[in-house]
Image (cartoon, rainbow, N blue to C red; front, side, top):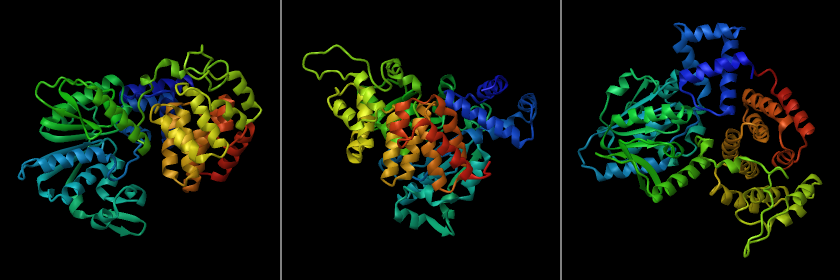
Length: 488
């Protein structure tokens, strides 16, 4: 990244309270460059002047729209909706509820809450507010028209009851639309009228805080907690709850999900059961393609590759009663010679706690055609090591093989977020984008892959990108970019 662009990224990140790794900051830099092109600006100093001038707030909003991943769908995060449903059913029959959806995107979350209330006969006793920083997303929410993709997890009977088909779109029932009030709000704006509306019985703010620095997260969560009535609920994404500390709210565990609840004198302590439920919740979020946990949660040792062979751990001293350690030099030689079946035979004896060898074993199962074995082993490893980028790339390839493109996309995105230098996920995302008729998105992914390929590790190219070598994969990406045409 050029020095001038780096300065712009730093300034925008500071103003947005943005917290991201190198890959996120690169994405922010790309968004800035795209905005400069759209405004006809050639000099970064001219764009900086806009940011610091009277139009700066509007320009920051446009950047936020470009930066935020608005992937959502109806009835996403059913575990939290089930907690709310049980609270509704257990409460007094005449009680009225106020609900806030903070970061509502295009409206799927608040409309899901409204439909759930209607199904329970509570529509007249539920008031729902929904806010988002993106005017474009709010316009889509208020229009109430959605693609079939947004309804992918909506039960058929709910679809029939609350949606009508209009060509290739689905329009939500006007009665449900009328139950939600939408408003523009930047959660970082302390002067916004939202913060004067205390008295909510439940606040949803899921997969929004991942974009903020830790100090900003603490501030926003504290203000959200201030909106919640005593006894009320605060629902965050599980990966966000993992990092949240707020003395006003207390983490609770119910039916293998976790949420915050406001009690007088809450201590905010977590039990062992709470921690396990948090981890289980993060596993579910990975399957749904939700926001990524931050890399700070990884032990430093897991981020360092062995100097002896890529992806393999160094030999350890034998311990009585445990399998002998794998010789990484021998396995590395077999990989270079593409003797994958022999390498897999060696890795079959790897100790269970030798994570790099177990990851490589799953990858070699896939390469050797044992798709079911690779799927079972990969997901068993993900259940314990959910921040391993290679496992998510392998899961993406397996999902593609199994005819599950949406899950393949989510796992590949996760792999690219967890390792910003990882080329194969971008190749897969580019290929899937082309299949979905999205040449612009495909071009972006193939260009990202080309940028990363020169420094990509050889074994990851051979095992996690369909067997291509570096040069062949570069030529493939270049040919696919040509196939995208002029889609900038």
